[in-house]
Length: 315
Length: 153
Image (cartoon, rainbow over all chains, first blue to last red; front, side, top):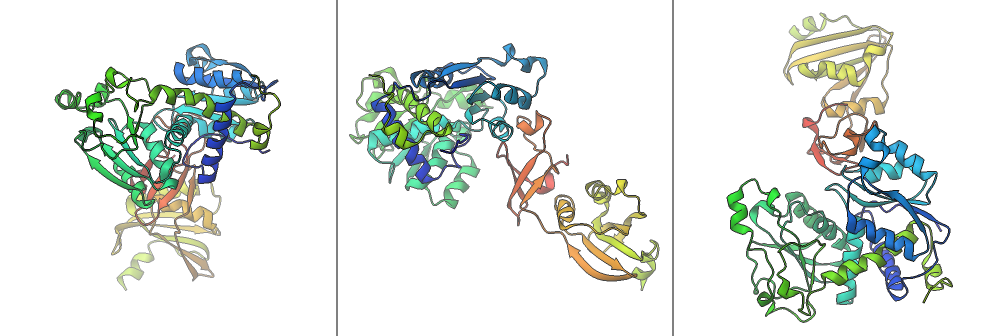
């Protein structure tokens, strides 16, 4: 099997996304295996991201690989002025695949062009975070039984939120209807609305966040409205409590509706929602493990056949 | 007749390329993009001539040098409307226009300071996503930029 990089989500075709989702399902059935026994995975985190790193390292460990790496650029040679290219080439001597988190945009794409081993993008600045997107797609599939023809409501910071942009682009294959609910300052950028028009994705925009507006949702994808994103603090004070999801707002919700959030949340989902049957953000984070196990196998050239007929499953 | 008198201000060449209708202020950017300073054949550079097409124009005559289509396409960023007259035996034998390429490699800078291309010694690559409106997209950070607002590498 061919090895692959996993650098961005919009480069993946419909079949490839469904393939990775199917593979993640296999890992959900049996997460503990020795498929990657004898392999070494490097996790290079140029900026700290504990949640993402733990998820990738857990996925590698549960497949029997060993993990090397750094958790902060301050402790690596970057602080001595080494180029990214040199670091990547050096680590390629040691590891079978490299998971990389970087604050610079396009860093993973460049690394994939210079590295002889597969590069997995664990986030590059405000640009891409494709493993988050895959776990979001997996969660949508898992809760709805399909990715087709869904009403997806994106709420909160739609301007800077890279997860909502990635989700928008990845869903283009599945005939979705999007609803964008955001304050004016954090509205969906024009370039993504152009993207929607170009790919025949239907969308509606709302400033109100009420039970009536969300009544037809299959998925509500919440994001955090951050104070530092506002140029006008009066505007922040006005909207900070508008985009909070409370339990009483779910009265009209469809029974199949699930609430997702890339986490961490602060106050945008009230704690009384946690016990609602619609809450799904904790399970969503757990799916990150299965999605990342699938990403490792895809990148290291392990086929669906091998995953399905795996003799290394640990019970 | 007046034009022909002005034309004579710049010596005719026997064989080579005459680059005409360069917006005057872009003349030296064209010189740089085509790396004319590295040539050993005679090069005449003139600018601030009056022009009906571009106000004031520059004109460059390069003896015994014929540019490849690839080299010519580099000009699309600064002077997309220039005309290259191919000269043989003092006659114009062909007129070439700049064709906007699908990709620009190591010609313009990305205007996103957080882009990897501005933080690592490497080539820039841009895809031209909209030739009509001159929209470039960075291969690395995906930021779109307008062709007439970019900085050269």
